[in-house]
Image 1 (tube, rainbow, N blue to C red):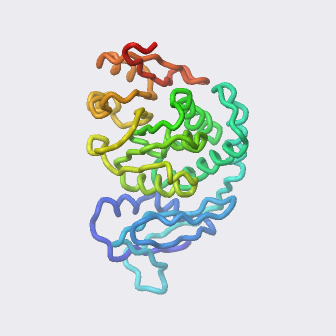
Image 2: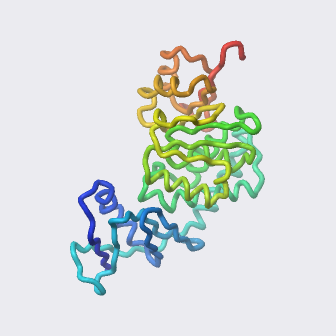
Image 3: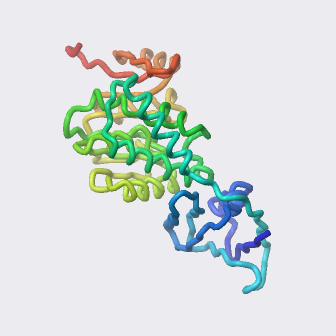
Length: 292
């Protein structure tokens, strides 16, 4: 058993969120390197392993028990190393085997970069809840290949905005594959926003990405030609406000039958593209007046 202590922290919701069972489980990763920083996450990585990453706030101080006087110690059980090599290989195989079904023929270097993105999400998903738990193959198909169906509708050198992007879906896979694209990622949760900034730097797409930590209604002076959205909370409820905010930009929304009903209620004309290998997930493409 290894003990850590939290000292000098106020009663704040963001700290309380860290100090829960998930942190306890995450802290138990064997042979993990932990680094400390005041406000931004430090991502320590070692090939083939998942290493612990935390968002440290100025008021949060982690110290090993023994060298300092312990107050409210957090006891963490060590568990075995988690090897990402097999998961990465499964992800790459799934992309390679299924991409033709999605009308894609990706170069090996792009597939490798998409695998880097997959690994980066997995390293931080347990703490940040970026996506629902899934196998590497499911992530490849449902999250990455489905996101890439967007590319068919994005002209060269397009600027698009991704509202409620979360883990960076669908925007980051699109930006990885198409170097001519520029994207604005809007995410209201601060810790996910910092994750996105780190992911953009890690994947070398920062120069083509703007990341905004606000509700979409609060984001002003954003330039874009297309609006996409994949997993916005209460999507149908927020749709009228999102349509008004979009200010005439073309809509590319992922969703199911409930979203179709909401779009029809707002008198939005659209075509729907069924996602390959799915029976109920669609990409809704707005049809502008006079455009077939």
